[in-house]
Length: 168
Figure 1: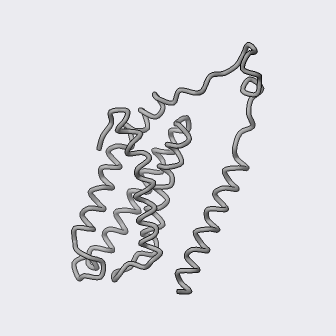
Figure 2: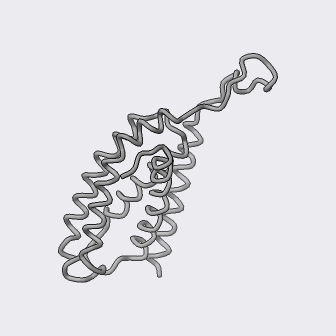
C-alpha cells in the first residue's frame, strides 16, 4: 500500500514539474496573434499537416519496432512466469535502446501540432519509466499504471498518423 501511494505521489510530482516547465517555456503570443480578428495582419490557425506528416513518416518504423518489442515480450506469457521473467532483461534493454532512437526523432520535429508532440512525448516517457524499474516477477501496480498510460498516449500518434495515411 505504501509503495502504491509513493508511486502515485511520484507521478503527481512528475506531472507538476512537467506542467511548470511547459508553462515557463511557452513562447509569448505575438502581436499579430493578439490583434482583433477584423484587423489586417491577423493570423490564421497554423496548418500542421505537412509537419505532422513528416514526423509520422519518420516515427512510423520506430513505432512498428516498439510494437514488435512489446508484443514479443507479452507473448512470452503472464508476468511472473519463467519465460516472461527470462525475457525481461532483453525487453528492458530493447525498450531503452528504442527510447534513445525515438526521442531524437521527436526532437527534430519542433513544428508539429502540439497535441501530437505531447502525446508522442508521453508515450516515449512512459516506455522509459515502465522499464527503468521493471524486474522479473509479477508486475507492480506502478508498472501496470505506466503500461496503461502508455497505451493511452500511443493512441494519439497512432490515430493522427493513420488519418494522414501513415500506418505501422
